[in-house]
Image 1 (cartoon, rainbow, N blue to C red):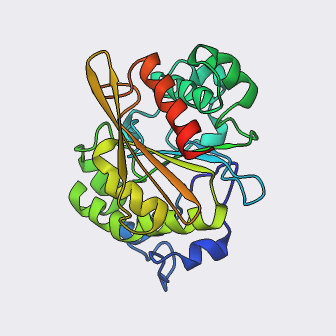
Image 2: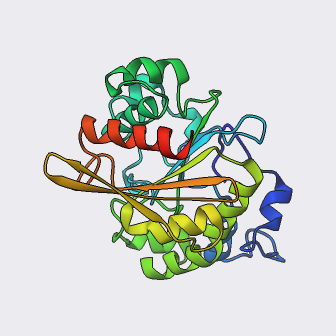
Length: 265
């Protein structure tokens, strides 16, 4: 389990449907069994932050999977808490920078104010409150089709489709359990092609999503969303690439305004 500023209670993990007793020592367990056990942590494979609580709920932003492959990490044994994830560092990443612009807009500010907003709120910095960053799938890959020999060795899964199928059946319900436990004020999923999976991760089922369309510079941007049992899910196209993605300040501003005025009012 990745060390982060929050740790789900052991009771929560044991209640997730993917956990089963290994009935043996770690040395005797198979690589796949050990990977499955770690994947039961709904926050495994993310960048950390604050999961929040009923009294002080956070905004959760989930991607599909981490974009940094394990084999290009300088030291894969160093935990997230030990890496430099300062705001200055994050501002160098286009994805994070655009996420800060979106957050600023959600909070009624201009995207131009994103640096001041980020330095004040410090999303995903160790010890800060209000924001969590995770992923649907726990193993880091360069893209969603990547599956290397090292990935097989690390996970025990022969191919990517097998891993995704297992995660959809077991890990996504574990994320939904965490949503019920921590009560985030907003769950943002980034990756329009995974709308059904984000729905299952947030609501525990395939709750149908409505569509809101933006027209930005001649391009249509589709925002999928749903509210159910006090939970709010928004599924966005990618926020750093693609002609239909939220790749401009105008698109991020309008999306943040829509979320703030139509879903979180």
